[in-house]
Image 1 (cartoon, rainbow, N blue to C red):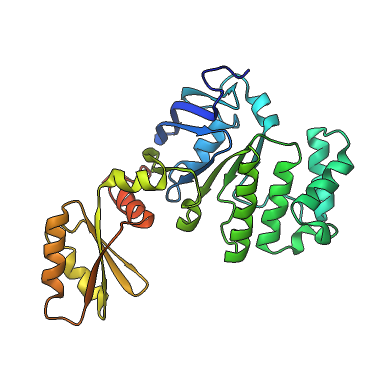
Image 2 (cartoon, rainbow, N blue to C red):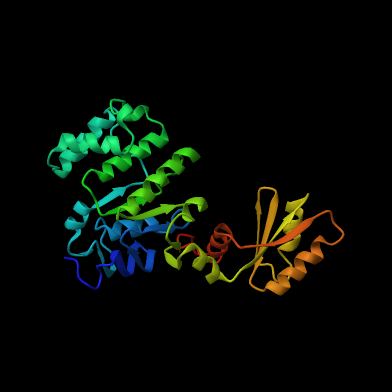
Length: 315
């Protein structure tokens, strides 16, 4: 049952570890998600996000560590957690030869939901699926499959949603509509933990955590995560940016160079040395440079580049 110590948190886990063979897939991860909060879980592919999510909702037992999910102990009360959480996996896991309504009715039967037909009908209406309720799931676009999957997660009125890269491969409008739904759910008191690779989605989260190769590198608001890295950044615009990038990589104060569209972002920890290097390199060239606010993507690329891949073979 929920105690006073964790009443404010939908998720409160400490020191989670998980090995698969000799690989340390999750290494001492601790985090807290407040009730009614959208918490973004970010990291490269293979970083341990899915494994961590599965441990937090009782689907996978950690090698060590402890915590609660919705007040239930993740080690001893996994069955209760599964009944109270909506979990959307990375891959579409429903039946292509059933309609939306039939898929949702089947899920409702699994949960033993009373007044099943009315619950399915209302959930379909709430998620804007009424006009497609009789359409086969296999005929749906990525955005509508995603919306159906969210409807399935919501049938049993969960207090927490765990969404594992729910918008991967979905067009921008569908992603925006999906996030509007999430914001509305959070406003109603439902907690959301969502893993994503998209920086525009990360910026819409109340809090963020960044994991790379099993280790939690940073967490906090977007502004806090950016500030924690203490990076200064410049943007350079003009021609031959790849050539310029190669030159700047070896200059004092330059810790990172990344091309974004028509601009080259240059970042470093030593702000003064970075500025001198940028100004020296662009002198007498048809280039324009401006100091910019360091963005989330700059920060995440920087953190990832400084972390060893835990699946890389020994040399």
